[in-house]
Image (tube, rainbow, N blue to C red; front, side, top):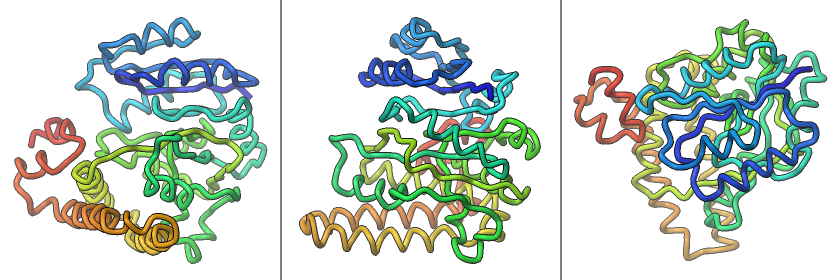
Length: 306
């Protein structure tokens, strides 16, 4: 099984050297290491070349969540499995890639994603979110699980995700022009095509965020736009809001037991997410200037001419 690792980057920052070292330590290493860099102004690309990556530099304005990853899939010709990592997701153990690739020993699996652990400096709210979304038990999900899991069936993250290349080709690859959630868009099509999604809790990366409340609002606004424009996903798999409410209840219970003083900030953050999501689903009623202002992915609206 030939494997290509594809990484989109832009000014990877202070963790980049340790990120590259974690890749270098993998056993076995991928057959190809591919970096698509959005014209970084730091040494992201040069350090990657020193580590053995082939590097493709694109203009920053051409980056597209789905389109750029599809470029990586096409560049990874000859690979049986294409693994994606984000620049802020650091492999946590030497066999992380080996573990996620083992999922493809099951011929029914079309894609697999790994467990995300919080960085040591993550907030308690983020620590809980990681444990809620990425539990300690592995699982395999398919179309038969939709009545039980609903939208959770297609939960996927290509911060650390792998795809069987022939399955990606079968479903048409990544869709260009998506504002966000390109990973779950592909996951939905993979499941509807009769393949399965594996979650591998033993394949681990460190990956967590430090978003402000305003950034959380903008991020969820983009999620809402995605769901409004890809309404077939909710029709087939149910509303994402149901899963969100499960997270809210779990997080409040966690904070009540561990950090009760963080309950009010957490509720403000939850409210920002909910309002952002709802506004995003109503984006067709909003003026173009408002959408650019509310969105995290402002380049998306420029590309649309709004």
